[in-house]
Image (cartoon, rainbow, N blue to C red; front, side, top):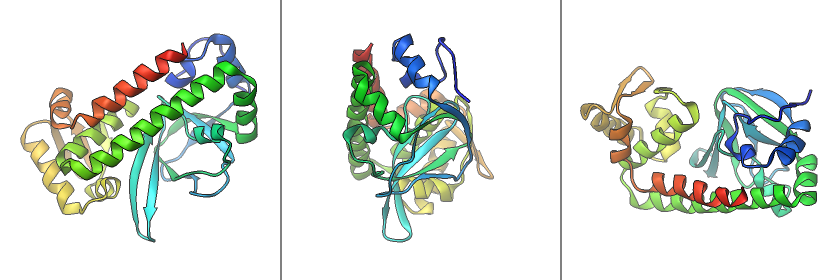
Length: 238
């Protein structure tokens, strides 16, 4: 089954491509449904498929030891999973897990390599996107080291809302602690502060964003830096 459509699709990265190149991608993609908790890549193992999320989103983790991990990237319909194949290395740099169920377009890794190798426009877009990913990884590393849990939590909630287009998020404190690489008690304190300020409400694993403006003011500049890096770099590909 192929996705044949010359109009824009619900993936912003693909929409940066001119219609002809975008159609080349869509013709060799398969629509799939991604399930929460599904592992798509394992670090240092060969990548079989690349994914372009439409309504789903994916987290990439660095694992430290057997039980510790830290989220380094969140991919939704602004991007893709597997772009590092364009660098010539077939292995996944990080473990990637579906954090938000939904639809995506999937392409065989060999076909993706062929598309990038044989089309200059596609190659330029993917390499620009890789540049953005490197910037965002660096930003995340600095953010995790220098900024308070409350700021980092606000940033992650903004990133999640951007990809879900929803004010209602199903997130437990235990899950957020794993994502942020902190103790559960630290998330409880940070979330409690945001709740007392009327920015979010939290009950039984359900977080409701009451004030996007308040969340932006509570976040560190890292959120805006990542958004700006994406917009400034990928517009070059137009």
